[in-house]
Length: 285
Ligand code: NAP
Image (cartoon, rainbow, N blue to C red):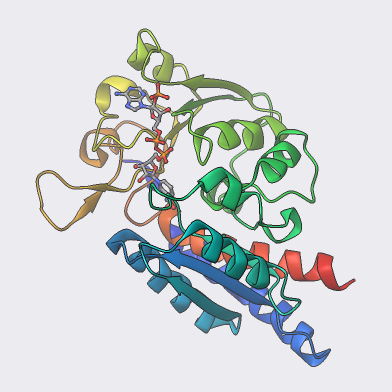
């Protein structure tokens, strides 16, 4: 049976360190603060907002939600957003995406200053991440995968990592972060041939496809480390979530498994807080 790489101990360690740092800032009269921008009230945005609130509350990180109606006009939204993102009191910005279709999302994203872009929403941040510039924040989810990998002491040097998925928010930056640690990386997607065979060649397999339980026993082999990034509505249990990995069939085979739920998801919001604290550090020193 695989060792389960659970998110909880990772979260506990990160929170302890962050609480201390935030305390230090406050003793110097600085209040690290996250601004969250939400247009409308999509249930998944509200769910994520709830977890952010809980995480921030637990470590003393200030947090404010700026809510806009679903039918907000482009000009009005741009005007308000400029005021929010340029406020000296706010060190990090998270904007829920996608925005409603009538808004020009690329134009709006570009208004977020790169130094406050704590979840890699701008092309400027993505450029920094791909150029290995440490002042650019990678998206929180692949960073959470790296926190898990580091916490559990998984060696990536010279290992073959296979990333399943090539989105800008998970797959591509995940590959860059693995490459930084000297893994040899293969990125797979919906047109990849012989997908199960390619996945079987991995030492580390990261599943980020958005397909409930797609990665089953046919995709894995003994000795592997598998990280499940997927958060999907469970087709067999309405109202519940499941990952991209079929835990029941994979767990008996592989060496280590970060399960979903219970793995990456919980670490993501703490990474967001960590990025805000780092952004605050960069903006105040
Ligand atoms: P996405 O934008 O839909 O991208 C999915 C990727 O998987 C695409 O590159 C797609 O290939 C590939 N893919 C889809 N079906 C495939 C198949 N049958 N075979 C091979 N490749 C396939 O999704 P995402 O935003 O990256 O998210 C991926 C998963 O992570 C989702 O379950 C999402 O809910 C979860 N997620 C979790 C967190 C967290 O905090 N833990 C955060 C964000 C996302 P093509 O490019 O060829 O279409």
